[in-house]
Image (tube, rainbow, N blue to C red):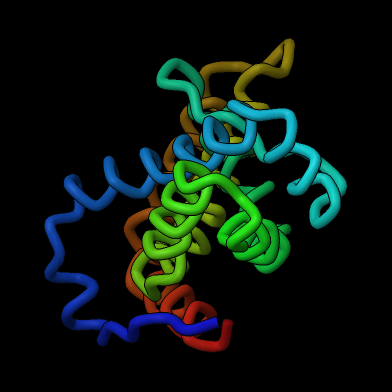
Length: 169
């Protein structure tokens, strides 16, 4: 797989909000691409044991589940998309598959995939903790402060680690 390389400095200088929106739009695009056709879904299921997940605007846990599924089976999803770029496929399928491949094979996308898996995983754990019955306000405050500390203290190290992971893929 060929991935466009991006330095840490270039990566951190990107318009983060714009790329954030783009990143989750691509994740959603993958879901819709495969779910729009039983043939495409059958091809995906030959490569991946589970269907990719959908991102919803209302639940960040859905973002976590979607990114987790994509990250877990990333190479397999790339394989399915490559299969759908075959000349035997119709031009619309080939074109959409190629467009998704071009978007997800960039180091920035792969880096963000790893980054968001970590951040959304922490967010998911925090949400689950806060939903427990019988918590006092002090426990909730402590968990929220721990999440904020994670975001503030680990952000740069996590970003660097995610870029390194992306380069290895």
